Length: 424
Image 1 (cartoon, helix red, strand yellow):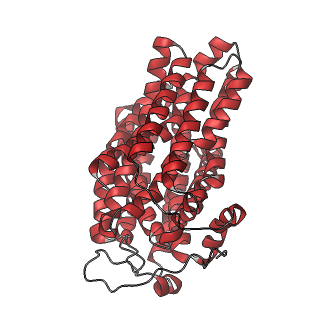
Image 2: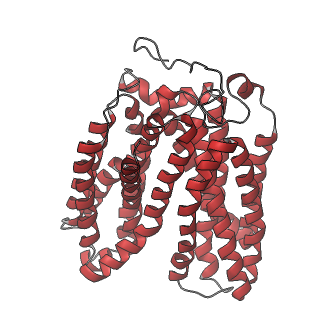
Image 3: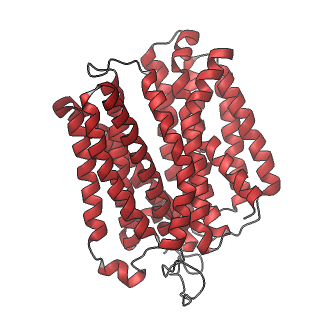
């Protein structure tokens, strides 16, 4: 894993994740150009998001079955062609179809994580995962700015065409630079699809990592779903652009996640998780002060959302480092289980947040965030006999034994993923 390759993979993560988010900024332009209703234009965003979730479930497990170079190049090429087709769509129906294809195939970031975990030594894994996550975060944050600015200048088709050209260019570069990898599984495709559920049932470290991320991401989604309602409501009376400006505060997390990864390598994933969960709990108290309105309330919202963003993203680095150490030969299937649980938690958090906001206001949403953090903390502080039998309680990225460093740790064989190509 050279610095050049790490930079290239980080850029690929940014483009892959950004593709999911930039259409949100150009929906009004699509409405005006294609003479569609706002609700119909919003279906483009929905099609990409649904496709992305389907891609995580249907395609990411193939990262254990196929060589990474042709698999990633194919995904990026299909994404690029889908974006070009969307940019040339003459009507809303073809645009929706192209958006769905783009959503399914733009899962490169979820394939790159397991790939990178296998290319670096255990004592560097956290730092590398943190760097990749900073790229994903940057793509998510900057995609809306890219889409909105370019769309205002050149029309709604321009962001799709430019993003398509970038994806195809990355595919060409990766085809020449990615190292050759050997698949870790020979299971048939149906068995690969069933493996994430089987891993959730058999691996306690995977289950608790999924619980941490599902609860924290649920609180995160509840906050950002309801923040627009608060800022545009009577307490502040601001426009929708205020939410976008506040979201830029989260750009600080791009600098924090690589540092969090290095802490995981040195201190262990469990210690980083503990600090992050406490940070989520503190952020709920800070965010609650935002209900008062005015400059002080706005400052509380900025500080609280920043703390929540940093805690959520840093906790994800720790969780992924632990998950990738469970079974080195099944990292893509482990990542499928982990990310599916995370997105389910986020969806549930958004749904609960809106309903709680309607009944108890912003303070109720902050109470939900605190409750979810307490649930995760209670699990984190409870001794686990099952986890103790398979992993060190530190739960670090340092291999299956949980050693924080490769030196001085006794060799331990990873549990077999499968034998002679037979299902686990």
